[in-house]
Amino acid sequence: MNIRINLENIQTLTDFKRNAKEYVERIKLTNSPLVLTVNGKAEVVIHEAHAFQQMLDRLQYLEEELKKVKLQALKQEISIGIKQLDSGDYTEYDEESLGSLFEDIKARGRQKLVEPDTL
Image 1: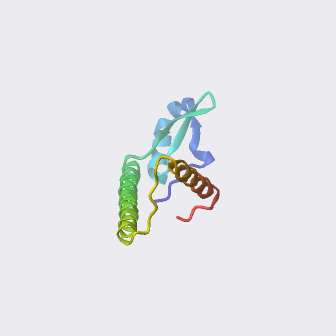
Image 2: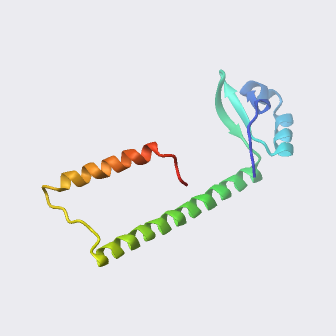
Image 3: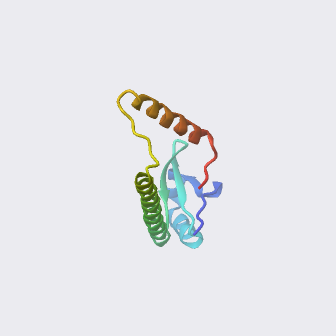
């Protein structure tokens, strides 16, 4: 489902009130939402009910899939951590060295922010 709002689908609330029946028919025919403006500002979107429900269902599905992906990534990170602990491939920190760990984490975070997204 690929829903786009084009300039033809942006109308004033006043015009919609005057021609509601025609606009509703066009919305049903095109499955494209209509944006209504008040004083030149977008205020309301009107959408055909079935198409709107499909959009909500798709959004819910994608949110569930994202949760699954995040959970899988977390499980992989935990697994890596456990393997590192088992193999002794880790560094212990005390109160004196903890500051350098935090600085290293901050630096890596800053670096990730400037790198292009890999997903």
